[in-house]
Image (cartoon, rainbow, N blue to C red; front, side):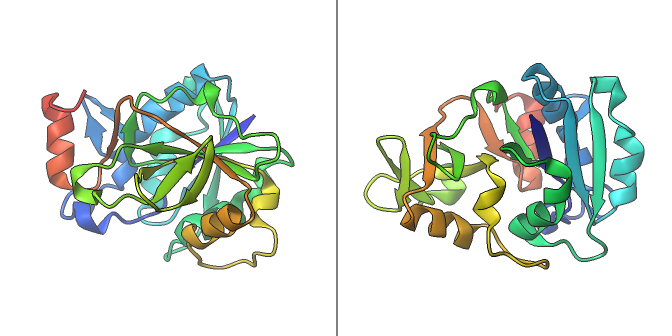
Length: 220
């Protein structure tokens, strides 16, 4: 099983912290955010990880090296000065992720989600992890019904940035910059997006204030 950590974004909402430090390298309790993911992926049995790069990408490469200190082999996909957005970045990395399902996690989330349990339903093109809506995203993204993701209706949940995809999920895509949400909605319409609600620790570290809460221990 291979995995990808999304690390190419600039983190505009985190300025000025991200002016000189890429967001995945911002530290929480003495370690960069991305390091927690690498440890958790190794614990889940992952041995090969792809990390995409753009803003200050060389600093990420220098900090992580070849990944051997975490028992991993890291391959880097450099997207150039303009990141390719979530789906564009994953599509660009497909040649390095192999022919089977692979895990993806946003490099700027804080979570104790156990990656080893991330598995799509047999006939799903992808499986995504949803979480209870945080205060800053109260409207949510999607709903769940019997283990399948539906368009937002009634009770909604927020996409965590954690997922497992089959390469076929990206069928018909072409190289370039494009977002993930339209592909998720396409899979919902096809009845091919499974999901789960995770109610453990999760935080989108999207602002200096939320990072400060993590540092203070007010978020577990």
